[in-house]
Image 1 (cartoon, rainbow, N blue to C red):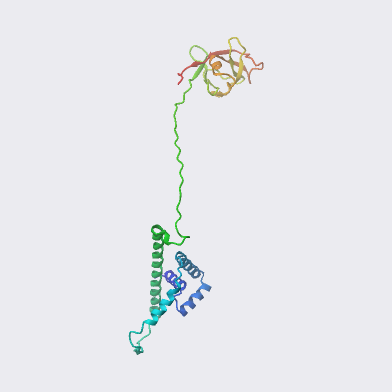
Image 2: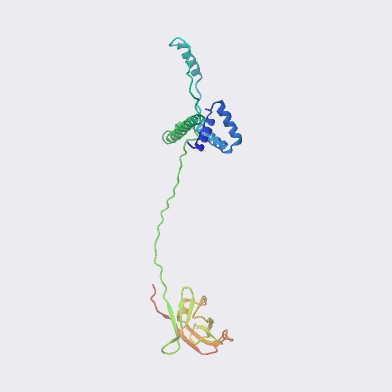
Length: 281
């Protein structure tokens, strides 16, 4: 046994009250100077106290004590009384050493700890089995509570409908017969315009501006100045219906830096119409 096991056994015996007067005096002295030993004693007292709580108190009937006294009085001695024999011990050659005494005390404490631990385990198993098989024998505070689980099941019907994919519309602003200056795509649902500058010349002191004419011969309305990047995305068609957008004429003009000063195209303009390039689904 290690020193810790010996200390635990000593604390368990103190909590059980099985020490003699000398050992109990030693234990009480350790309680005053050894915090670890005090903690071990408190731990054993808590364990044993929990076992006491698990057992419901039973009061004997009033007539039981009278029956016990009557049986003791009726039972006579089976043998005549005699004095115990006196045995004279022979002298021992040498007294046992302190190591043997210490080892004997440790073995006795180890057996006590084993007995206490076994009793704890047996009591806990009995309590668990009683709770499961005969809960009516347990105190009301320890009887298991029935758990009621309420489950609400709703039947839901989900109908999946394939979402329609809108058609794509493209307008090509042709520079010449071989290469386009700009390519424009329109998202009819989101009312957005994306313009890609393809072969148009990039000028540092000029700007390209996008226009829309909803009716033939009508005045064009500005959709904004194109940026200097390759792609320009504008959400500028929110005020127009899809049918109007599909039938409109679009134009890109070359303007002074920052756009037209007159809200009308002032430079050369190239025009294009939207063309549906994918089928509606």
